[in-house]
Length: 390
Image (cartoon, rainbow, N blue to C red):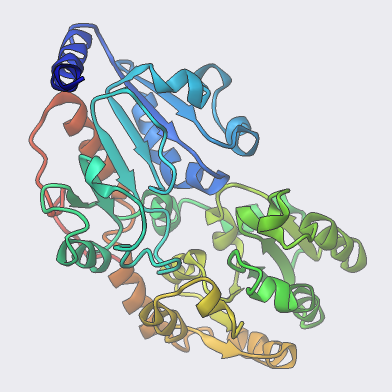
């Protein structure tokens, strides 16, 4: 048995050495939920454009994500386990694919809201030591992980947030998106995007929030977290939110309310004049547009979602906080009348939380190619010359 243990690393190195003699490289992308496609999709698409790279996809929940990727590039977890890959990348370290023949591993983050102890996950079984590189969205979290010894300086790389690139670069036309959604012309659009939790504003007052915005003169786009739409009652609290909001669409008219189930929220952010959330990464993402943000207070959410109090205060420093639908009606109208209020705070927080938005995909692709082809990649430093961001 000891002999076999000593032999395994040698066999592993030989396996990959022989494979590198063949043309091309194989990359496996894991997508746990649809939002992970929004996070990793820009990188995967850029890699897939290279004829020397073969990009494959897998998930522990194929029913959630398989329709988002090319069918000929799909692998079950069982098929992937013993297949050889040059690189595996994910956007969530919770439940990685058990790969037996993988040369390199790369982790990206899928949000910045500081929920579920992810600002300091020392007590979580995430095994970051298994990754060759961990790609960070901002300096704050990278510093936290380095200072806590969760990742080493050799692993940590600051890349930014590829999901945000097109939004930050003005790559979406809000008017076109509103028209594609079938919303009534001439009205301002409010996006309601609560986080996932049975303690969120969705469960507290979500339907009333949407009705209030409609009565206040807004068209309303509803974007729920992937997990809130999951069929598993552990995630939706036993409520069919599709059916609930379909009823509101019928009640208000489909040109006034639209529930979107798109994997990527970025086009919806571009379409919105204001946003209402409780505490979510998309709330922070909306800040790059410097438009009014309203936080609907859900008092039990910080404890239930284990939110870092610093991040809770940070989002609220950029937003108007309301506790009732009556307050929401007043503040939504007021925000449209004075959209510049809190602009300085919004821009400051966006600049701190999203490193150099618009260029993260290019940095990420450079990082991947360095792992695939053995180039020297600087650790815990920027991969491109800094420029002024938001």
